[in-house]
Amino acid sequence: MPLSKPFSLSQPLLRLMSAAALACVLAAPAQAGQVLADQAPSAALGRDVKFTVYLPDGYQAAGSVNYPVVYLLHGAGGDENEWRTKGGAVETLDGLIKRGQIRPSVVVMPTAGPASWWADGAAEKAGTAIMKDLLPYVETRYRVQKERSGRAIGGLSMGGYGALNLSLRNPTQFCAAAVISPAIYDPLPPETSAARRTPQFVRNGQFDADTWKSLNYAAQLDTYKAGAARVPMWIVSGDHDYLGIAPMSANLYWRLYQIQPKQVELRVIDGDHEWLVFRDALPDALQYVDKQCRQG
Image (cartoon, rainbow, N blue to C red; front, side, top):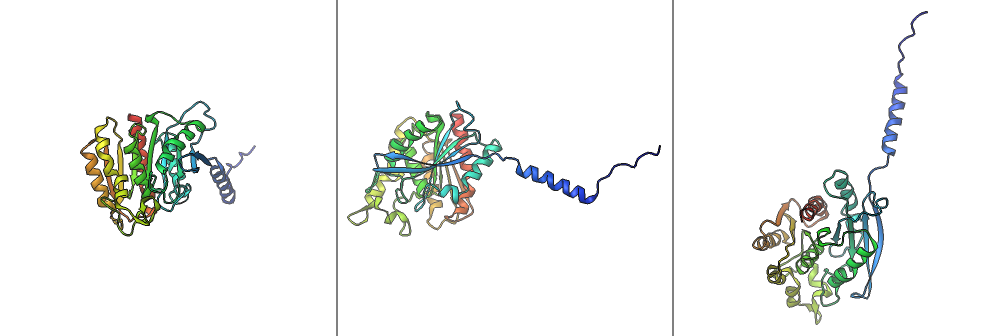
């Protein structure tokens, strides 16, 4: 009986099988978090605080696990969707978690209004709304860690101003903070800044310098220094920031260095006051706060 010829696949069949295998790979479910819209009633504002919340992959299945939580604040004119739609926050979080660069975490992206500055200013108490209304709501509704060691905060531009001031005013509540291109003008914001036109810093129909100074971070440093709690701080700015935030960030770094030399970092990266910088800065910011909070 003659031996049969060795079995071989035709090139068209090989291509067909390769395409089928690729389709199976592409169809395989990727590790991805879930994004929900929610709102917290706020007595401080007299309206709800809207927010988008990122729940890491496996959140629904891990019924007894409490996750670290990061509050991520938007900039002037933004809303609760800005970090997701412009900043690539969901994709960044999915990637960092999948690669083991940060722990699976819940990330809350709120809005207290496009010009709230996350402060208790002349128009409304946006800072109180975050601390007294949003945080308790999140900790009741979602499985997040309620201890300081499991709670961090960050933000860009106006949100960087807010993250810095909220963490300095409430150092026993946050284990770390990250401020990206923070609008922390000292002593006063430039004429081009949105801060000069927001009701939070306006009295008698015009920008009030004393209100700005009383709410900005420099006014909080003496009280912060006198306390025992320290909030590790990640500071980053674009080198071509047209609002002059790079030197302001360096000044903030130096002031905090005098208080906590081993718990403050400054990075200056290429770019302006723009989403290219904000997006590029986000992964390192998230990794920094996660590491600091894990170290306690």
